[in-house]
Amino acid sequence: MEIGVQFYTLRDNCACLEDFEKTLKRVSEIGYKTVQISGTCGYDPYWLKEKLDKYGLRCVLTHTSPDRIINEPEKVVEEHKIFGCTNIGIGIMPGGPTKENLELFIKNFKEPARIFRENGAKLFYHHHGHEFERLEDGDTFMDKILEAFPPEELGITVDTYWAQYGGLIPEELIKSLKGRVECVHLKDYGVSLGNPIMERVGYGNLNMERIIDACAKSGAKYLLVEQDNCNGACPFDCLADSYKYLKSRGL
Image 1: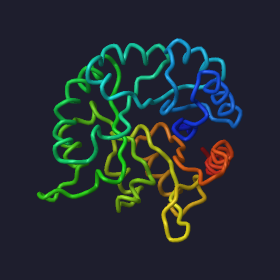
Image 2: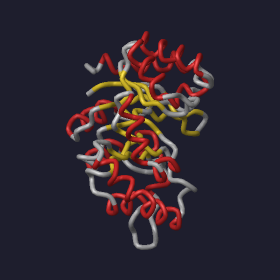
Image 3: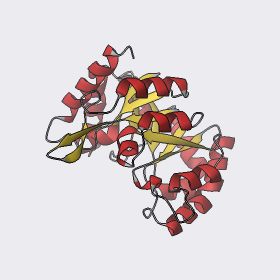
Image 4: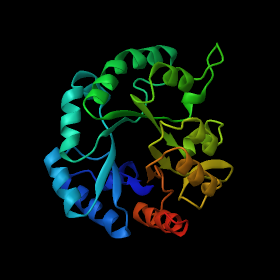
């Protein structure tokens, strides 16, 4: 398994191409070799390829506009292949977690998911906590998504913080999704003044050793460190602390 950075953590440092490049450089200097591109300014795929190559990085996943995925799936795959990425993700359910939007999600993304597969790519869905809300029939939103899409056409980007927030044990969720969890967001879960906070990996209350073991046994390839909110700390320092912890665990 490879450890990487989810660039949403560094979104404030990627508001323009000049800063985006500086951020790629700093991530490389910490020691990371893989990245997920999400939350950055717009970029040309050839520009991204050049900068990834320059700093010895590899993009293994993106979050991409749902509208583009629906309306021009072949072009999205073609652009991703320019910078060597075949995992194309959705960051959140469009419109929010309602039964109506769930039905639209399944209707709108079935065909793009198939097209991605036929063109050598794969669609990924990143969950939050609301996907584990139970519907009237007892199923969760996530149950409905998994039922609608075969594993070869939809991967699930498990987010360890949001799994815990949603009332699940992250390592058990990862195990249950074997075959769909090539990409995992490692995000620790802490508590401050009685409220949950996002923590550096290894600095919160999640059992990261069990999570890492579950990832290895379930076919995860990329463990992407993410910390949406660094609680006033420098995000580069937080990513460096997470990197040191993960390296101390043999990754």
